[in-house]
Length: 216
Image 1 (tube, rainbow, N blue to C red):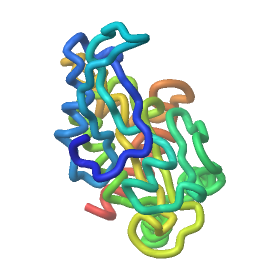
Image 2: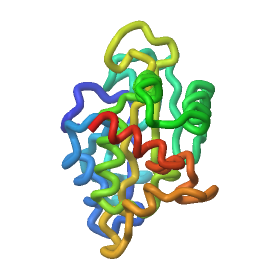
Image 3: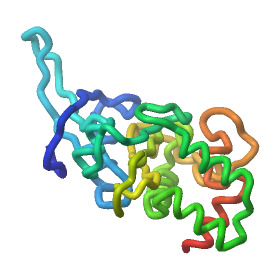
Image 4: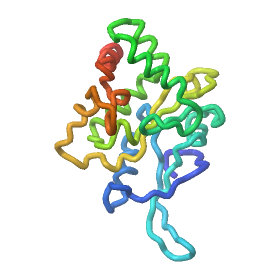
């Protein structure tokens, strides 16, 4: 598979709701390679089911603890991986909920706030993923098709530093609605349900605005 040196597991994926070309999600991932969040490499494969031709599907890196180990060098046995509406896929959400509570209970106009946030999350990863998603007009995000992870037993710097980082997946609904106001959706407040409850939006009661200003 392109752009990866080792793949422990794969998914065979159709085009979801991205149309019949089987290209959109894969092309978006390749286009965004090199930004500060994880992507899923792909390769089109001819598929047979019980010896009969089934069609062309995309082989994709499976987004799990082994993916994190292969791509970031962290131990798959000690990672926290959360997806969608704060659903724990691997490990625990204890540190994530601590981060959310911090955002809810502190104001952004202080150096303390920015320093503490930087201790919880990789700023570049957060900004790159949210900026790319807004630019692509993803309309089933950010409380869906959103994944974030950390090393649960940090031992060093870089990916093993214990801070939260983001992963891109399922971008099929990108660029589907020309009039979709993604920036407005991603900065809204006062919502409690899909697709943009307060915990998932950039604003988080305007706290992320202070975050963006502090690190701009």
